Amino acid sequence: MGLIVCASAFIVYSMRTDEMSIVFAGVFKMTRPRDYVTPFQSDALSGFITFGPANRPERPTDGQWLGQYVNDGMRLLRENTSPADSVASLDYVNPFSFALKRPPNAGGTVWLAYGDSYSDRMKPDPERFLGSAAVVMIPKWPTGTRFLIDGALRNFGPYLNAHFRPVAESEFWILERPKY
Image (cartoon, rainbow, N blue to C red; front, top):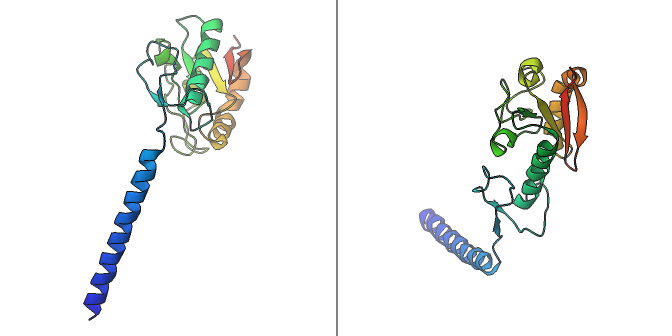
């Protein structure tokens, strides 16, 4: 008897789950899908597609916002640096060397996530990480959480303050050069 009750409960549960799946699928089909956009103003990034919509930039989940964020940084770099300048970034991603077809920062990284790729105890040496960079991009609004940029500034800020100085600024970025 217990087996029949369990089997019946399983069948009813499965049918209910199937009904809900059909309802959710119908709702999903009825909603307008998000637009695909290619927001980046870079030949190297032109094939990358993000979710739009293009007229509603919401950070940090909207792909159009990411495009504006990266484009703002590229514009700042194009206006204030030469094509031979290597770029380091304190955001958790650094698209600039690839996007602008520049030499990478020797010793740098394309992924800098506090609590993931480094911590207060275990981190790359700031002199090696930033020492060969012609410029450093410091985000005003990080693509990730505030926790990530706070960790980067805590770990690399003293070295930046001692060896770099701000030279230009945009809506989303601060550009710093070595003091020498």
